View 1 (cartoon, rainbow over the protein chains, first blue to last red):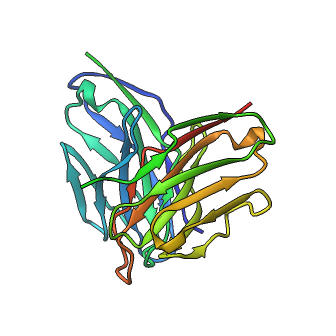
View 2 (tube, rainbow over the protein chains, first blue to last red):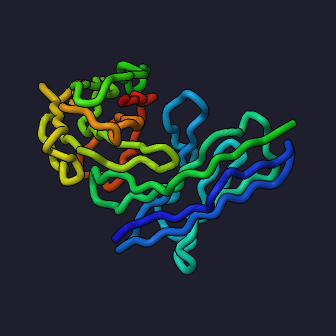
Amino acid sequence: GNSVTQMEGPVTLSEEAFLTINCTYTATGYPSLFWYVQYPGEGLQLLLKATKADDKGSNKGFEATYRKETTSFHLEKGSVQVSDSAVYFCALSPNQAGTALIFGKGTTLSVSS
Amino acid sequence: EAGVVQSPRYKIIEKKQPVAFWCNPISGHNTLYWYLQNLGQGPELLIRYENEEAVDDSQLPKDRFSAERLKGVDSTLKIQPAELGDSAVYLCASSLGGTKIYNEQFFGPGTRLTVL
C-alpha cells in the first residue's frame, strides 16, 4: 500500500540555521509528492510539489527533490526564520484522478531568534 | 478569491450528542474531501465527493457518521451520536476535479471538535 514516513519532531532551531526534515514513502506506481505547511490557527497550505522522479520543488526558500532510488522527498531550507515555525506534512498522491492525499504524521518546527 | 470555508471553527459537545460541520468549497471545484486529523497525526480521508456523488467513503464509520453534498456545492458532515474518541480536527478540502491526474487540493481551516 501507500504510506509516508517523516521524521519525528519537534525540531528546534535558531534563526538562520539549516533545516532538513526527512520524508520517505512507499507507493505503487509513480506518485506525486508534496510538502504542506500548517501555521498556528490556519489551514494546510501547499508549500511545494514534485510530480516525477528527479523533479525539484521549491518555494519561499524551501526545496525538496523527488528521489525515486531512495524513495525520499526531504525538505530543506538554508536559513530558517522565526516565521517558518509551523507543522510540516509530507504527502503523496497515488496519481489517480481525484484520489485523496496520504499524509505523514507531521513535524513541528520551532525557530527562535 | 475566497478559500474553502468551514464552520464552526470550534465545537464542544457532550458525548452522545449529535454534531454537524459545514463546508463551502472554492467556487467551481467539483471534488470535495473530508479529512480527519487526530492530535499529532496527519489528515486521513473520510469521504470524497465528485460533484454530488460520494465516490470514496470506505473510511467513513457509517454507524455514526454521515455526509451529504446537495447540489454538488456545499457539504455537511454529521456525527450522531458523538463519542469521546471523535475529538479531533475535521478538515474540508476541494479541488477542480476531472480526469487530470493531479489537481491541487485547497484546505479549509478545519473544525476542532471536543467531546466531553
